[in-house]
Image (cartoon, rainbow, N blue to C red; front, side, top):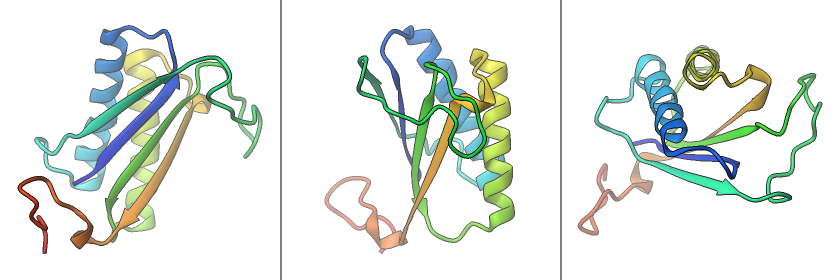
Length: 126
């Protein structure tokens, strides 16, 4: 049920992308009650000038290693669950690929359950 898009600057290895994706998914499973087999991720590697972010907005210090994680998921998780998810994802990414917590931007996009079709042209949750 979550659809995860990971955007980062071009140049990371396939192994880096795999391990980063596992860290993101691990946090979703541990903190947001996502089933372990519910993994759908799209990775976008972009060129120079195609990922623009203020280096200090919200009192952080971003580098060229910025990773943006946009997660589309069902509405309904509490603020506490979201805060735990953000913290766990930052910790896991730091441990997995040495990503500085300041270089992880996470955006949750909440949608109603009827907005999903996982195949066959059927409303999966409708």
